[in-house]
Image (cartoon, rainbow, N blue to C red; front, side, top):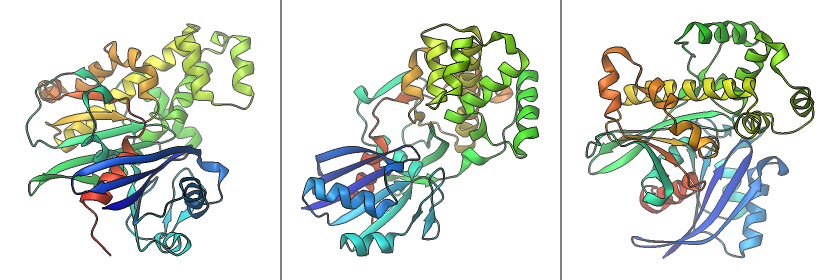
Length: 331
């Protein structure tokens, strides 16, 4: 029997959990949610959690935002450098592993139940087929799962930073608008929390009279601007916000379809992250899947791929623990 401290450390929030593993038995002991920026770094975050739970883990596995190839890791969307050696020294734990956050999410999909997902395209899943995971939140993460030697192995990527490819005249104008401000335009610039804000501001600049005064005031104040725009669309029906959300969902579907093709994800595509569960009704209306499958000669292939939205906010956390229990070598 062993105790694993699993973590999903994001640019906005962090989930930490302690899991008891005994053979194939996997028991959640405690899970806590933290605001990432409340802490100076990962050692401080983990130390506070260990004091709270009063138990010392045998190993630590963290999903972190950014490429995990060489340590220490410079986190993306967080002002932290994450060093497993430093963490091991501070916590007194010999085994400390870092995964890309979407790599952890990918492993977490292997532990989901039917209650954890909403299926928006049943498709025709292929047994042992490759799978893809895409997750928009603070940033845009992408990963895959390949069947290797009788089990799925996660493939990390930084696909969210690949170049955005517009598919319509309006999206081409969006690209030009973003390029004038940022230079390189990645998919993360249009499919993420900041992506929704960017899409909204692009449309607002094209039609400045469409923004109500009350919404302008809310967006000018400090607060989660993407959430304000989403609420203005979904609860208030503000046409400018409705159009921004529609365009955002179409872009999300288009990039999910791109990833499905690159992975040939005949086993299915999982939509993770914090945004999709909040707009599941709008995603299910059809615009997402229309853009997902709009790939010319490959459209029929994409329509046969199952697409599922993940509702469980602890998927990456469970994936980190899954890796610690079943995949990580003893150091």
